[in-house]
Length: 287
Ligand code: AMP
Ligand code: MN
Ligand code: MN
Ligand code: MN
Image (tube, rainbow, N blue to C red; front, side):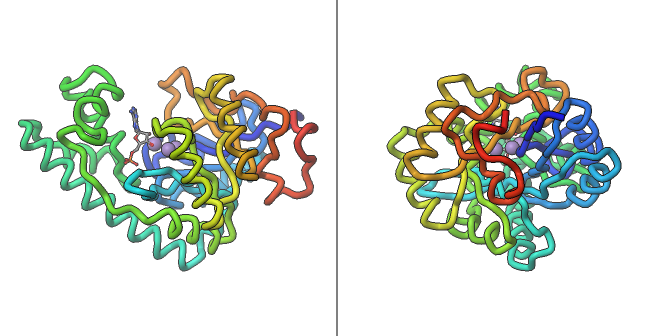
C-alpha cells in the first residue's frame, strides 16, 4: 500500500466533530497509513485513537497542537510522537486548559455585553469533556442566527480586534517547544501562512523557533495552494527545518478539508517523519 501521511487533525477532544476512534476509522477509509491526532492543548483523545488504530491497522502518531505566544502573536505548534504521560507536558497542558476555561468565561461575558446570552452554557455543553475552543463559540453564534458562517463569527466577533476577542497568556514559544521536546516529541510550526504575517516576521520567528528546539514546518496543509507549498518549502530550506504534512481536518461537513487528501511533499523537502520513523525511506521515495 502506498504511504499516505496526515499529521494534523482534530477530534471531539477539542474542536473536531468526530470522536477520536471515528477520526481514525475515517482516516483509514480515506487511505491514510500514518495519522497523527493533534487536538488543541490536550492529549485526551489519544488513548481511544490508539485502540482504534490498532483495531483497523493504521499507524497512529501521538500528537498535540499547542497554542503559543511569540512577540504578541499566537502561533500553533504541533507536537508529533509525544509521550503523553510525560510530567512536564502534563503540567503544561493543565495550565493551557485552565487558560481555556478562564478565556471561555470571558468570551461569554463579552458576548453578553453585546446582548448575546447563553454562550457559556452552550459551548460547555457542546465541548462536553473536550477543550472549549473559539470554534465552539463560532458554532453557537451560527446556530443562534447571529452570523451566517463560522468565518463570519470570527470576522465579526472572535478574531483579534473584534468585540469578543480575549487576549490569552498562552505558553511562550520557547516553553511550548520545550514541553514537546521534554515529552520526546518533534515540534512543528503549524500552517505557517495562515497567520497573515510577513515573510520577514516569519523568518525571524523561525530563527527563534529553531533555537528553542523546533524541528519542522507544515509545508503541505489542508487548503494550501501550489504557491503556498513552495513558499513554506522555502522557509524550511532557509532554516534547515524538516517538512510536515497535515490536513487540519475538523469535520466531514467541510468538504474542502478531508483526511488523507494532501498533495505530496514537493521535491527537495525533507520529511519530518524521518525523525521518528527512521526505518522509512527518505524524500524522493515517499510519493
Ligand atoms: P482557539 O484555539 O480556541 O483560539 O480556536 C482556534 C480554532 O478556531 C482554530 O483551530 C480553528 O479551528 C478555528 N478558527 C480560527 N480562526 C478561524 C477562522 N477565521 N475561521 C474559521 N475557523 C477558525
Ligand atoms: Mn481547530
Ligand atoms: Mn491551528
Ligand atoms: Mn489544527
